[in-house]
Image (cartoon, rainbow, N blue to C red; front, side, top):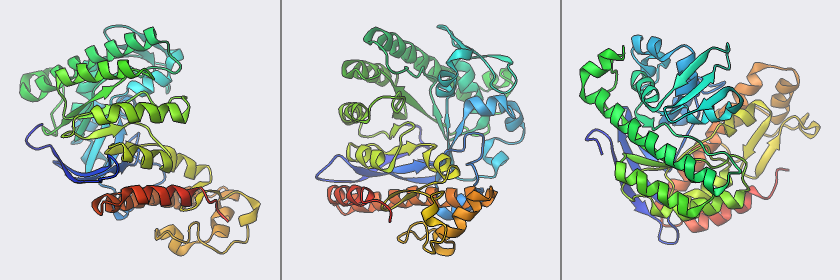
Length: 391
């Protein structure tokens, strides 16, 4: 791994594969397992950077596709890079844009070279390649860069999954070669019209192969041959049954290098995260806590709470009596429900603050349980509590 980017395992749970670790970046230390709030367009929806800092978020996620289209990576680069542009001095991971292009399948055309697509904003045509994705992420200056991949759709036949992962492997090699060249050859960056605002960027490869174990292994073998600073598990939470997703995680995670961070992309619920941690996953992201918050769906220590339910109209209790977040310390369920029913923006702010706080606190409790070699007991009691239901 690059000298300025490092990862070390700090504790292992003896009864599971769960582990704690420490990722060092040029924008600070990240304690793992970690949940990364999603700030797709340079903003974690409904939350300010000060609020995220107060909650203890060490890293957030931005997206190449969206920032490329608006306000453009060149503008962000001119203004000093993404950290400076959004006033965030902690770590940032940028997704490659592959999943967003995948989700826009009616508007895309795939080839060996890359993906042609139409902007969801104005219908303009664009061509995204592994090289272009690396160029954009270099211009943004994120601490962790994701290689460009094709997110295999679900369901996919074995042949479709095999073709898709082979393309992802070829794109992964092109991604690494191009990003290395940008950082090692100042002329290359100059020709691309960007100033490298952060020379310390780690690159993660993305494992694909759909639900086929042997294809997942083939994908990993090909990624290991290329060599990356970290390894992600992609192509999950795309419509498959939860037990199918778990089986893939159980199979491939233990085969990932022990001395590199392991990142499960786009997953998921608290139960999903706890299960994946037990298999040795270190990093997570998901839009669920903020998206659900905007829809009035709150995560609590006893499961989910739909604040729009009439039963809460005169409920003086906080969202979660075991939560120490600012929302729960100050506001009642009745008030937050009133805000939702009135269409007040503050409803989304307070609920997002609570949901992200809940996720970050969950990760702190997970890390503590692992460090005490008591994760299995924690997993059992925690998931039990989540299933009890909110009164």
